[in-house]
Structure formats: structure tokens, C-alpha cells
Length: 77
Image (cartoon, rainbow, N blue to C red):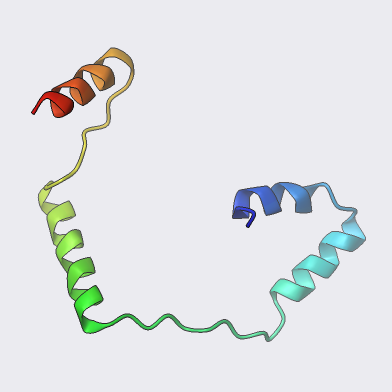
């Protein structure tokens, strides 16, 4: 399955008329199914969000040598 980015790039290559057809399709009254998560799944998502807000299990934003050193430390622990 193509990613949204791939599809967007393809849409940009279309003629204006073809792009209009895509826009009309997207904004049609077609309904998309609603996702229903179990209470257990919702509890896990809530826990993940709370840990994120507390900085738990979050990797720092690093680049280059700092990132490599950080990953090596993780591998050794």
C-alpha cells in the first residue's frame, strides 16, 4: 500500500482537471468507519501519553556523533 506522501506526490503530477476530480472525491459525503478501541487499549494509550508527558521512555533529540554515542550506551546497558 502506498503512503500518503507517495499519493500526494502523484496527485501533484496530475492535470488541474484530474486534481479537481480527486478533490471532489475526497470531499464527497463518503463516510469513513470510526475506530473503536477496547477499554484495555485505551488504558494503554493513556498510560503511554502520561509517560510521554513525564519524559519516560523518550529518546533525546540527537544528531551525528551524539546520536551514535547514545545508541551505543543503550546497547551496552
